[in-house]
Image (cartoon, rainbow, N blue to C red; front, side, top):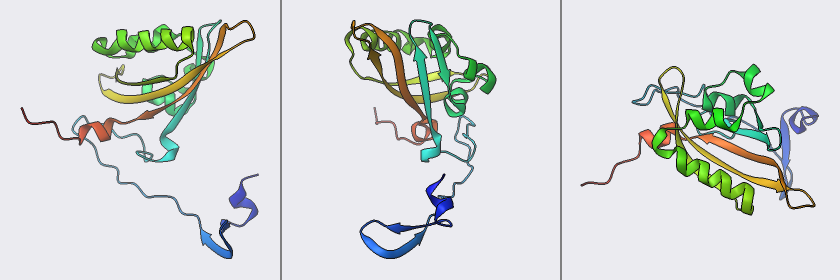
Length: 165
């Protein structure tokens, strides 16, 4: 059961016993960046953090709704899983080899996967993604599972100032 449901939407502050505060959600403006992209009303919120699980032996990457949207897959397809190659195909060609190499290093050496990359969506739009994760190894030191998270940073990238030349 959700903690807010038990307390009627209120929670006691852990350091100030007896003092209650109302949990409120942050409101967001639905503005389009120059590329025309808005991720629902979840931009820059914790709700915009997506998760994935990759069964390495089956080569099946299962995504939640946020991760699916970030990579341009429908929720039904994402919940059944796609191959890692299907993900790589959507990554911008200039970044694809770098991301593929980072995936390879993660599943062969166990290093943490931490990449920023641009995704080319089927509708022609583009998104910038931060993906983080790690491979899980069995007793024989064979990678069997990749788990991680993704965050869409398209708006952040759109409003960054480019250095002067």
